[in-house]
Image (cartoon, rainbow, N blue to C red; front, side, top):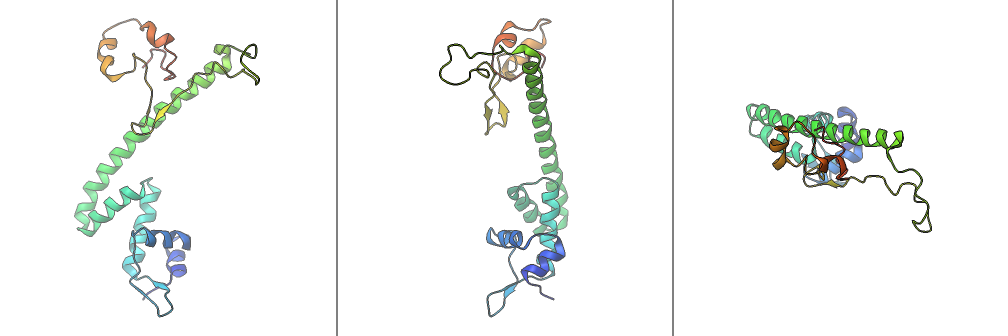
Length: 183
C-alpha cells in the first residue's frame, strides 16, 4: 500500500517538509507519483525514512546517513561494520568537544574569579573596554580544535610529558587553549 507524504510522515514521526527535503536531496525517492504529481511512498520508503530518523537520533549527519544507507542497500551484513565505524568516530568527536567545552568553562570561571584585568575602559577608544583582556579562542573548523599553545601542540607533548615542570610558554602564551600546562 502506497502512502502520501503526509501519511508516511505521520507513520514515521517526521514532519512532511522533512520527508520532502529528504526526497529533494535523494535520501528517499517516492515509488511513484499520482497523475496530479503527489508523491507516493511504499513500505520500503517508509522503512528507509525510519532508518534515517533513527540514524539522526544517534547524531549522524546526512552524509554519514548516506554511507549507512549505501551499506544497507548492499545488505544488512554491511551495515553493522559501517555503523560501528561511524559510532567510534562520533564518540571520538564528542570526547574532543567535551574537552573543548571543559577548557572553555575553565576560562570563564577564571575570568569571573578575577583573573581578567578588570575594567579596561581607560584609553581603549570610544566604547567600553571591560572585555578587552578576555582570551579569545579561535576554533579551526577543519581540524575541529582550538589553536594550541606550544605546550599543547601534539608535536611537543612527548617532550613536555618527560618534564616535571610546566613550561612558561603554556602559562603565559595567551593562546586561549586554557590548558595552563595541565594537559
